[in-house]
Image (cartoon, rainbow, N blue to C red):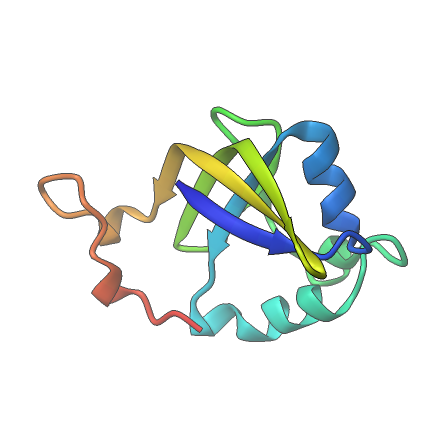
Length: 118
């Protein structure tokens, strides 16, 4: 299970409410400039993904794009939501995990120590 908190005024809030799904993209430090830009600009105002040349890939299990340059992407289906003050907490069931092959151990687990996360 994965939980994300979204303020209802955010563009992504409406997308999650309508689709019933979301993707968590784990971001490495080499992607920080792009991530900072995406987090401080709204798709409501501009095509920020095109502006930052973000590569998207289709998800396998949910109807949401994944950020292809992130080392790990977790596809989630919303199973519950809780309003907590200024945010709505979306609780998602992990449906599919994408990971760079160099991060995957022989047993299939992801070696998170190899990711230089923000």
